[in-house]
Amino acid sequence: MGRLFGTDGVRGVANADLTAEMALGLSVAAAHVLAEAGTFAGHRPKAVVGRDPRASGEFLEAAMVAGLASAGVDVLRVGVLPTPAVAFLTGALGADLGVMLSASHNAMPDNGIKFFARGGHKLADELEDRIEAVYESHRHGEPWERPTGSGVGRVRSYDEGAEQYIAHLLSVLPNRLDGLKIVLDEAHGAAAGVSPEAFRRAGAEIVTIGAEPDGLNINDGCGSTHLGKLKAAVIEHGAAFGVAHDGDADRCLAVDHTGDEVDGDQILAVLALAMRERGVLRSDTVVATVMSNLGFKLALEREGLRLVQTAVGDRYVLEEMKEHDYALGGEQSGHVIILDHATTGDGTLTGLLLAARVAQTGRSLRELAGVMERLPQVLINVPDVDKSRVKTSGDLAAAVAEAERELGETGRVLLRPSGTEPLVRVMVEAADIEQARSVAGRLADAVKSALG
Image 1 (cartoon, one colour):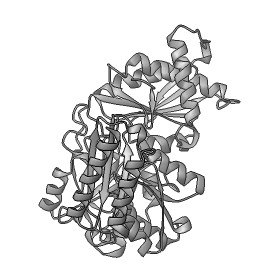
Image 2 (cartoon, one colour; image 1 turned 45 degrees about the vertical axis):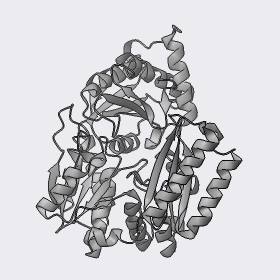
Image 3 (cartoon, one colour; image 1 turned 180 degrees about the vertical axis):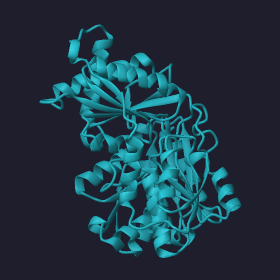
Image 4 (cartoon, one colour; image 1 turned 60 degrees about the vertical axis):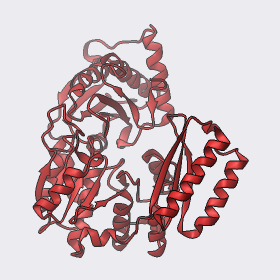
């Protein structure tokens, strides 16, 4: 798997890349690293462990819990809950460590491990690096001091976690959802229980699909990566709109009453205006990545709001938000972070706040999302090129400059080396789809010529 920790924890095919032995070893290493960092000083350490419904999560959870307890950490097993719920409970229960077992929107055979620090925040990169180093040293035979007797960790189920998380979500809502019929697609994932219950208690009439997880069907043709069933259900039931989560429910995409998709950019735009109206959009600023549609930036400018853009990945959005105390950020893919109420993307919270805005204004989601116009976007992957020279090639820089002159203020060019493959992604936005295709095609040819 190369370096174990990626941008979103450790992830791979369960029982092939990500084994029970690895889960146990990483849990022991995490306990040791946090102890060395002083996290456990003066008290008995405590961890919260949750998972999504994947079948492999059952044995990985057992291995993770065993490792933590063998290293002297008391464990609260919260069971199947969304990633943001585990992050919330890590903070709410005063735990020293949170662990979520999930591969998010990936197919069922995959699984993953994500660690949270105290307060439910992402573990610092340097601690992840140290955990990986300690894991490798143990794996190659370096002994470690094992507690005995009363020093071993105790394990118990914490069944109140779901109720605590739902109560937290409802406490955040600015108004009730009475009178709204909403279709929820739970991706047969971690939010299949808590999300519909939260919407019901908030007053909405709910139709659920993808809410019968069996350990094998997570993300299978449903959820935020497959919106077809949600679009059909919204129209069939005459719903006001629909909400789709992914397997661990840290994402939210929506579908309006006509079946049209409402993406993360549009959701951010709607929430930004709602938050400004309530006086909680600090610095009148929204954080998003460079992949956000140009139409999003133009809409915010028109509304007198500022957009700060980061590299692709919700971790970079979160880092920028925390550093400058911004309240709202996210990605086009539906990761939306409302930092006053969550330390990670929270699909259920996002959906509830979107519904609250519809209920409060009396306007349709389609009308609210119309605050921004998505400009046509063309993406071309150019394979088998030297991606390391994207920023140093003079010929390529000249081609990009020419494209930007042609597009002017109503278009945008982005060249991005893939992080995992030998290819360069060419993205072009323009007011006209034919112009976007033409410019993207020419730039793709320039990439091949300059870097091939």
